Image 1 (cartoon, rainbow, N blue to C red):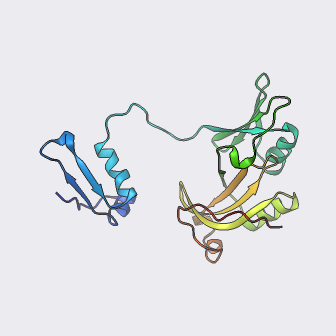
Image 2: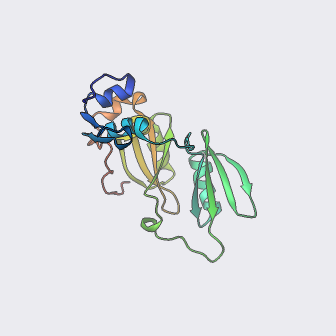
Image 3: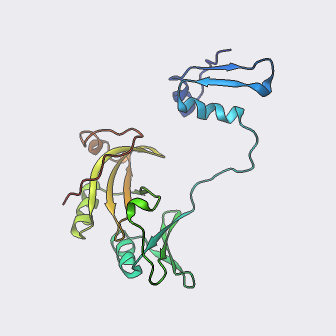
Length: 206
């Protein structure tokens, strides 16, 4: 049985580019689904998965290990303007407000060392920003923040956006992303479009 009924909204946009078939094999429990795209598989997952008590709402906070808290606070609080909200002194965790979420800076125990950036398990952290991208970049340059590459058009949770990649004092890679609708004139002509693929290898710029 082919499925071809249009679906509303984003699901409909996914569906129009996909072809799927159900083969029930005589029993609903033995449903076999063949799909032509990952997007359609995600749609069908809602109809074929078993009941799951876990329903995610989003990400509450992330934790970054840092080696020098004074240096990190100077970067995150003073340069990026992420206000220090709370300190857990016993665990040496400094919680910064980032919109509706938190970024926790966890100090490496005395005498400890951070692993090289490429061995930490996190490729990069993306933060949503507002404001003029030229002014943002000028601000970063004025404070000698290493810029890896960008602005460049990339795809994220809210769709296509304009991003710039930077490094924090411990080498954590941060992506600052502005919503696509805010910068349509900056997206066009700002290099290649990497629709959902990994960004190009970093090349430091002045």
